[in-house]
Amino acid sequence: MPDDAHKTPSPHDGQGFATRMSHAGRAGTRTHGFVNPAVHRGSTVLVPDCESRRSFAKDRFNRVMTYGTAGGPTHYALEDVICEIEGGTRCVLVGTGLAAVTVPLMAYLKAGEHCLMPDSVYGPGRNIATGLMANYGIETTFYDPTIDEAGIAALIRPNTKVVYTESPGSHTFELQDVPALARAAHAHGAKVLMDNTWGIHNFMPFKHGVDVSIQALTKYVGGHSDVLLGSITTNTEEDYLTVRNAASQMGHFAAPDDCWLALRGARTMPVRLKHQEQSGLAVARWFEQRPEVLRVLHPGLPSHPQHALFKRDFTGSCSLFGVVFQPRYTEAEIFRFVDSLALFGIGASWGGFESLALPTTGFITRTATSPDLGGFAVRIHIGLEDVGDLIADLDRGLATLPR
Ligand SMILES: *Cc1c(COP(=O)(O)O)cnc(C)c1O
Image (cartoon, rainbow, N blue to C red; front, side, top):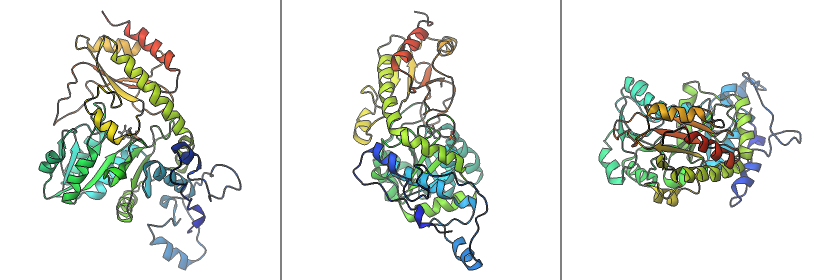
């Protein structure tokens, strides 16, 4: 059924992020006065007559509910919220952040074509490039994520169709000059895809030349380590249809219950993110002063090699960063430090309310740059705990290291 009532009016431009996150995706969702939209679960959607079925089934651009996989009111509400976060016009929801990485790659590339991917790409993104994409005859060149406009232009081939970006990079936190890479890509007619999970709303992808923005909603949007979900946001009708068609051909879908959890997460995300940003910076600065630490990989710190790009393109940071220890420490010593922490879990995802510490050395694959950071690295995610307690815990943990 077409359902105009679900077109939620965009909150007023110029309003603050927290205001917009409180009001987006709410109006007109037929909630009988309840504040939140209902969860619409369903496979079959009944239509009033046969003629309606014929006309509705062809429409992929408008919000026409024809079958569960085409989405429903719960999806539409979240799609509107994600567009509000990233400044795009339309969004495709998929079951995981990883699916949000793979769907646009498969949508924009075909046999005989070429993809450019940063060496610091999220690991499973590298896996599809060297796995399925290679099997289907799509070649990928991994490039130094800090490459400049002339450098990327020199790597672009006649058959290059996608310049993929992720800023900062997974585990190593290099920032990319996305507008410069986008200029080179567009001069050649290639699409710019970006994994914007770290930047969330602190990097506005479409203002910086990105065509397709990827988010693992699993992280800060979900915010409670209880949901897996991904979004692919676009800014033109053509890009929306390209992504949407690829997602539906491959049978991708997001569960309405998970969309509802992500909607709930989005309402409080501005407050959580601000708190976590401040705590993250405080802990990162504390680490920087410690003699056990060689360097801290946090784009928001002046010591970060591309901090100038951070100041130019980002309005803030999230609470995920890296800590590189002095080279004199062994793996066993760093493992003992991490194991000794009481408030930091050892786990892979991030963006939840709880703090995490994850050894990354040995899990970093690099083919165009060096994976050697100068010492053993631990990725830190700062949650919502009191920052003084977190620092006290880390302080006790560092005391396990030999002097
Ligand atoms: C976690 C993550 C993903 C994948 O998200 P899942 O929901 O766990 O599949 C994609 N990109 C980045 C940068 C991530 O950190």
